[in-house]
Length: 251
Ligand code: SAM
Image (cartoon, rainbow, N blue to C red; front, side, top):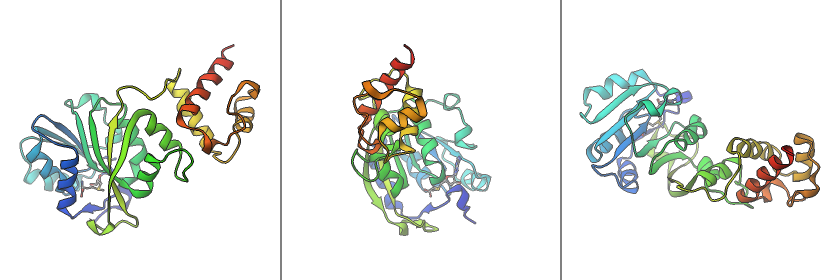
């Protein structure tokens, strides 16, 4: 039985899996990480194309099944991926996964802490829309800012519910994630930049000056965008704001 709490919507359309592999341009030079192989539809195709596949599955029930026909170049690990230190794995350079949707955010930021060249990932459409949203759009969010800072990201295609069993309630999207070599703007303290972004988007319709006065006790005279609302600030402006706030606090 598929477990909803583990995001077990299994891909049943092999053409979608083939296209994922094509988008990621997998060759025999690649070592690929896959999260949640499940019944192995993607794992088998990846194993044919890649040098090695590292597949991490939390649900023991699938481990024995997959093991029966496991190609030699697949390293299968039974674990919660959020608890796995990627540095303890063989070095991988690409990630291809139909992600369990309930861990979309933590797993994406965990990926982005690691040094890889490309990821092709399936997410819920609503999450993917927020990942790529630009300032001024209704989906612009903390996630959009964090992703923009760390990666280039595009939706490659929408995947209908009918491609999965059981069918999810919403559509899905294949997303291409390319980590940036250089950030698009510089922040003096990344942790503070992310904390500030979270704090701001808790009040996305409020004016910056009201949030800063209340949360950080800052006199906003020298803050350039103080009269703007959170949802109007570009990622660059949020980065600048975090640098200015730190300067003020360290005086
Ligand atoms: N790759 C398969 C496919 O395309 O049909 C399954 C994808 S299904 C959307 C997500 C898979 O991730 C399930 O097999 C689920 O058991 C596994 N999973 C869920 N949470 C996990 C976690 N924290 N760590 C590792 N695997 C997890």
